Length: 221
Length: 275
Image (cartoon, rainbow over all chains, first blue to last red; front, side):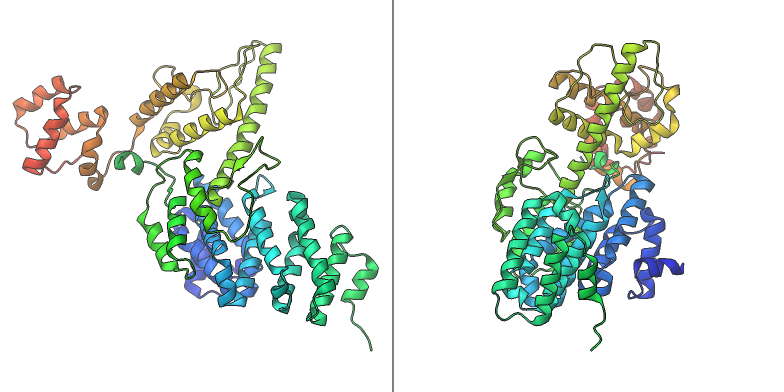
């Protein structure tokens, strides 16, 4: 079914794996769910496009498994893998910035989609904040890749995160203000991204019309 | 314990202990293959109690780079919550907590209904736990910790193939009291011992619906055989001469039978083909 490909962005997988994923979505009890979760996590760490939307397919599989046989094998494996990767995040960052950025994107996406009783998973709140706080450190702010990741996540889940723990969000934004004002080596792009996110949050997690025009309109010169 | 655990549906294959061992072994060099070997191992979480992870917390803390409080109070919890276990357990606990709270509200409503309409019988087809009609004015168990513990025990009993087969075979409205197992009511006030005993007896009753065992599992099961299963073994022994098999029903409930079977296993390597 072609819409599965589009909906879940699984084009980057080889055909056999795509088939596995499609089966997992429809009949989770017939596949090795541990393998499925590993496949998804592995790909999320490599493929930036996939990492931005992988949460969705995870959520569907979790729901399907719960409905079919009240199981949670997939979710358990997924969370365990995530937790492992989280614990090793510093090493990952040193080894490969891209993998680190993919990981943060993925875990935030999981936080966004994998709700429990329509609430975000409490277990993920601190880990997600830890990741974002790491991205707000001086050395990370020097990398546009990391700043870009940081502001993207805040755009997507900032309001939810703040509801779960306002104090931590305040802490994060102290760092962002400091970073914007005090870091000398920041590129203009990084400064632009930071300024925008500061305004975004100040506006209640949305941009005013004028700000929207400033940041996102084509500048005709 | 292998026979009983085989009838469990939920595969608790990855425990916090594994997580800590892997992390400590692979610090600085995450070997994913190690992780996969572990999981294929299928080691069961040995102690289901949340508190068992408290001594693991210390080793876990060493592996976290961030400085975080030892325990914290979340909006949902009353009082400090020990810092954690693995994420999945946290999520499962949260889920259980909200479902217990939901159950509590429903039960309270039933108490109110009972107060106003004593004739009202709620044949709840959708509810998962059996609840005896609440007696108006009866004090219900409200301690969340107790309720969560009880609910966990109930969930473990229901998460079995035997229970699955039972509920498929016997619809609720056809259950006969005494004959058919009934889930203990977690909202009633019972002492700890009384409750644990009720759960034990309930689970034993459910075993009557255990699926017929397959060939591989029997030899392992020999050490743990229930009296129910013993009866099956007796009837199917082909090697016994007719006289002794006629005698065995008499000794079915006595201890020597286990030794008898063990001896058979050692001496004659009987192929126990249970239908």
